[in-house]
Length: 114
Image (cartoon, rainbow, N blue to C red; front, side):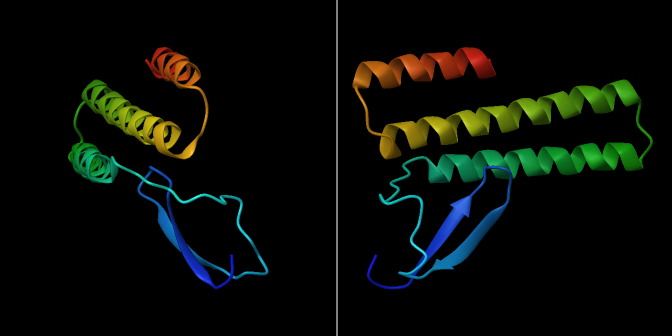
C-alpha cells in the first residue's frame, strides 16, 4: 500500500464503518473485495430493519408475548439469510481455493445455518 486508503466494512448487522489505513498501518486484507450481492444484502437489511421496527411497535402496544416472539424469530431468520448471502459472496469473490472445496463449504454453511 503506497498511499492512504479508506476502507469500509459492512458487518451485516446494519453497522457499517469506514476507517483510514495509512501505508505504515497496513491492512489484514491485502486483496480487493468484489461484492456482487451488495444491493441484495442492502435490500434484505432494509426489510429486516422494517420488520424489527414493527416488532418494537408491537411491544410498545402491549401485544401478546407469543406474537412478539414469533416475529422476533422471523427477524432472526431474515438476518441469518442475509449473513448467508454475505458469507457466500465473500467465499466466491474473496477466498481463493478449489471450486469443489468452495462448493462443499457452501453446502456445509447451508446445513449449519439451516
